[in-house]
Image (tube, rainbow, N blue to C red; front, side):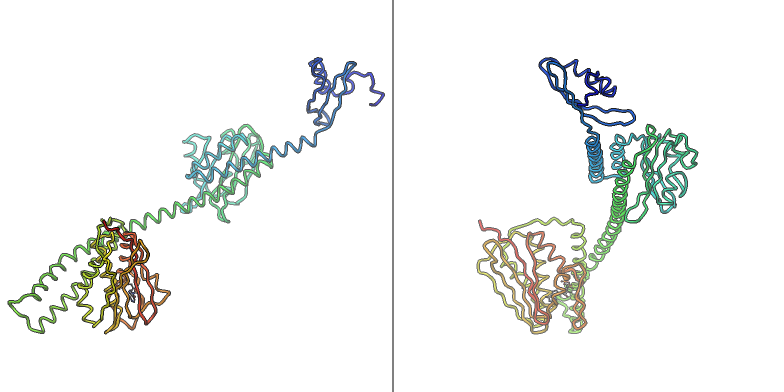
Length: 487
Ligand code: ADP
């Protein structure tokens, strides 16, 4: 210790604030407590933080002081950084978990209010049709005032200038400012005001501004945080507007699609009724034993029957597709003996088979398994596959229908033909509605709906459809279905 201060009083050695506290501490210290520490901020010409260690002894006290200003600054920095991180994390939470822009901005504002002593926020969004800015969200001003400032031109007031120049404006001491741009906010008692352009991926979508009547300025650190948050808000708002636009477009498309389906349903029903009577009367003519038709007449009657049946199939397929698309079909399932059903379906396509002189090989497991399916739709599925096999086979071809076990739980029904085959790259597309493989060599009737319907029905019956094919060699369509256990 410097000898010149020996014997001096505490108040002479230490600055006033420190001396007072040391005195107080010494007075408080009793015999039991003989050492203490304290941290103190000393103002004056050379402001600093000091830490004092005071040790009492029987004949006086030992006081050690240490300058801890640097340590305190570091702590302060860490605290500020931490607060900023918490703020940014909270902001990110609001952006992720809130859905509507108003919810997002209101909750963000709450968060920022504590940090920046805010009273108002305004969020203007560009209205491209009007070529103006429109106040979409705000807080801190009455509704009628908001109505008055609902629309801003580019270059009008602070927000209009920020939108025009795409640059942040920071206004301090607004209450004494002469700047005409800040007159509007000055009217709300705002003293410090910051307005950011909201730019998402280079595209300006609006502005976001915050104002405080308690502060006359914001620090750079605070403005940095606001800047980061505004950038995140811009991306979130842009995403929200895009999603809203997509939803709107989807609703419009769904409405248009529904109108198209309703129209098709109506037309199909209207066509089916007269067509059924054409079919009925033509069948009477064909079956009439009393008045035998001439060969010529019979030939024409058969042609009418063929075309009418084709037309009816087309109409029914369209109706099925509409119901599938509208998801209005709820298939009721029954236990069905699959061997028996296959035999029945073969009977139905017998005429077409004979017309092309196609040989059928039936390779069925003798155990006539049961499956849990909708009888009518399962029939339709097998007939569709058989009809395709016939349609896309050449004259004198061969079709095999096979039924066997895949494993202990599933059976596989395969319809195999030696027809024109399907190129590998087309094998998945043929299940899409209205898709037909462009083929100039074979002019086969069809609309490209049969397989869409097959796939949909089989999937509804908990099964799978597969195709294997080699071009010009033939195709194999298989259906795998769970076995329904016998009682
Ligand atoms: P459609 O036969 O009415 O055109 P589908 O949906 O039943 O409609 O079939 C879609 C397309 O798949 C057909 O246009 C045809 O190109 C192809 N296809 C279906 N089955 C076969 C098959 N067994 N052999 C060759 N091509 C086939």
